[in-house]
Image 1 (cartoon, rainbow, N blue to C red):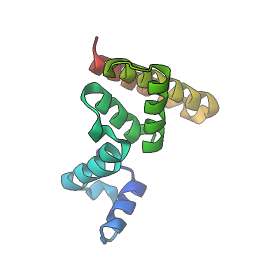
Image 2 (image 1 turned 180 degrees about the vertical axis):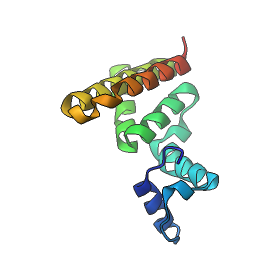
Image 3 (image 1 turned 30 degrees about the vertical axis):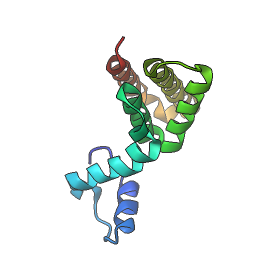
Image 4 (image 1 turned 60 degrees about the vertical axis):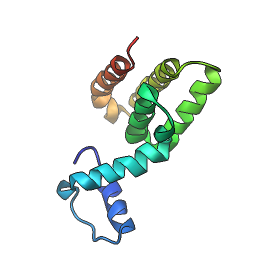
Length: 129
């Protein structure tokens, strides 16, 4: 399903005048369209470059477009004039804390924390030095 939830897919199909269907039947083209329009463009990643664009996009997919935009705004406020790598690292740090907060607030979500931290490590590796 490429990370697209059933509810996102249902909304996408409805928006395009299509009948709902099981997300297991999603096409590569639909996945691309959802990612492009509902996450990449909607988060503003299309106006960014390099790893910063990728990090904002990743947060948008995993935590929502609004959260990604808030994290970018906070990173810019905390690091005025910073380069894109510094902003990207700040966002990854915020995302790490977001995951920890979820696990602390919702014990049923703690089982996902190791996977989330692996994702954080992968994002940091993507940013590089």
